[in-house]
Image (tube, rainbow, N blue to C red; front, top):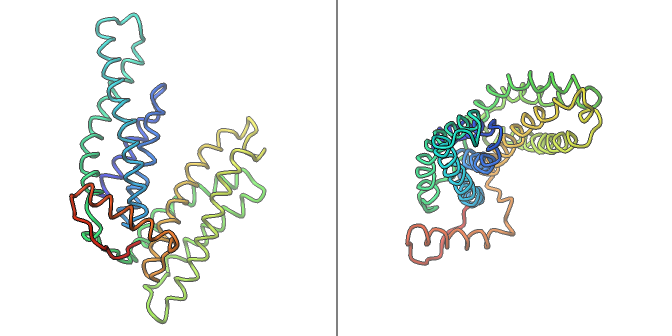
Length: 276
């Protein structure tokens, strides 16, 4: 299912380059980010957001699919009323979303599984794989931040150092779990840092001037990758330490999850155990 989420992100990214129909792919792109996180760390809260966003993404994509079908079919009979480029764009979107619909069905089936069929388990390999990927990401992202200058240079260096040190992050046990706890603080700081970077791409004159304005959306996308990654890191760590960051909201989340399970699986009402 993780592969499906990656494929969906790729297809939605392809669809978002459309000249006129790109907006219809954004909802599914957001949904697939939640699906990606859910497949890595299957906590109840992410599942609820996954169901909500996947529902909205499916509706948006299906509307685009129907619109594309009508428009390219119309072109066959009235070619003078719309240009060939838009005709090709509609065919392109129709084919992409047709493939996505198949994945929607499998993802909906995965989200409909009740919580008792899913087990939360700390996954140390997440850090190993992420560091291997983000190590190369750091060079590109850091180079762009250095291009901007000022305090962005510090931001470019910090994540590179953190991901380099993470290569030596030991599997936590009673003797080394303090190291993981230290990284929890570092990842939280990096999460705030990347959110600030995204916000400043809209307001900082260093990125809003015409000569540098093209860098802003690129930095925004690259920083967003880090935001999602840091959230996955933190969720994975909470599983190891058995900490519930939403403890105060847990009764409400449990009630919603139980009702959702009964709705999707016709499960009789019961007192379910707490799960993140």
